[in-house]
Length: 172
View (cartoon, rainbow, N blue to C red):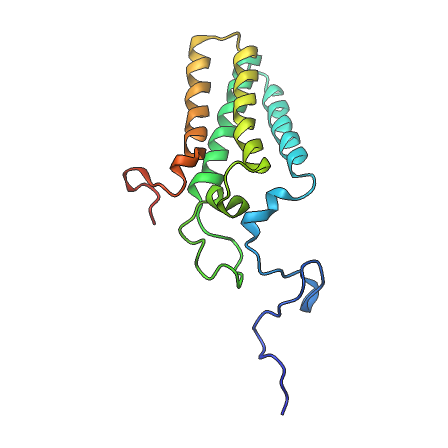
């Protein structure tokens, strides 16, 4: 009697070793750990810098508008990616539907609060807001726009709102 595993089921191999087909399989939710990978923070800063340089290269935008647009695009993208999208893009044995109702922010570091990754993702919009406010010379219109988008992205990150759906928005 052959005791091999039926075809189509993933094989469980130790983390970092190669499974069938040359792919790594660990059984851990990839959304929870990929932001802890080496070089992710540097890549994040470089991506925001490239976004800002692209916006600065648009001829009809002045410096203040470019900084405000950098802040707004970053914060709206951050909000959509971390606080609106739910579930995992990969099916794993670990997940089995557990992450279906969790946003990406709620999955980072398995929901543990005040980790270095969460602190970095919390401080990035604040630093960008400070830079945008400085380079817009604290113009009231730019300040209100920058402050409102920063609050849009920071309020959902508060530990008190972990798993909370205000007015049932994004409940399912």
